[in-house]
Length: 331
Image 1 (tube, rainbow, N blue to C red):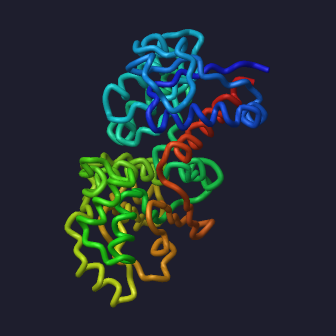
Image 2 (cartoon, rainbow, N blue to C red):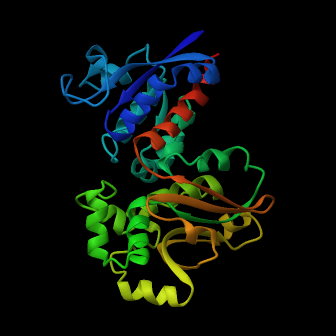
Image 3 (cartoon, rainbow, N blue to C red):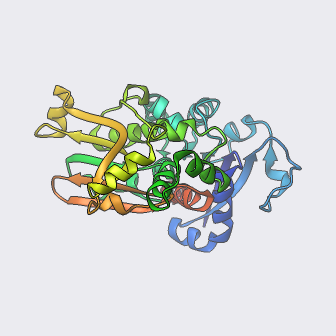
């Protein structure tokens, strides 16, 4: 059985989740991929830092080139987060003949064209299932089993922090500030929650969804975006009286006769904003930190993908799935 060697850039939340899954499910991963997959290098600030997972300190380095330029590494998993230096590292890995897997929505959204073009130019695979919806396999579905469709609409709850806050405001009548503080205490929200509550994170994910579903790369800064920080208890109550819930929705809708027609005529409409959803809409029932993507294709009709949109293990699951798909080509 061929051995496929992984270089892991970063051992934070996503990186540690992927590392644990490679160890925990090694037998089933080998069976699925037809290869023995091993983590042979890990980029981290400190070799001796105490960690919750057991990593051989011999494979830890603080020099990214020891992974990116190592001829024995087959696949680089970027788990650093942020736009830089992550984008530079991924481009360098591709130029060195490495396949790349990432969960980094900010880097992909900012540099989708550069990253996909570099992968094609260097004959390597670039996969990023974990960048939207954590463990929910929405991107793979769009690119494979649903590829025979022309997509007409996507609606998504793709940020667990804001969905948790809106859920608590609706169900427990909590003021926005209290619901946000609770989310921070539970680890759903960062100390600086701006990227989540102002819709920036959702815009990044919508950029990726639109690029794959509609073939149009719209940078996040060009997506009309409104967050939830100005939603009040009165807004929540008014929605309830109308039989509705307020949800922060990533929305893209094609208004032409076909994807190609709309691309030519600029008929793709898109936004990130709080929307009133009737209580019987499938997305209205998505609560707390859960995510869901509701997608419509002209052949398949309406589908909804639902699950945990964040966390070390759900996101790590998607990362490992991408690695397995690449490893299959090594047989």
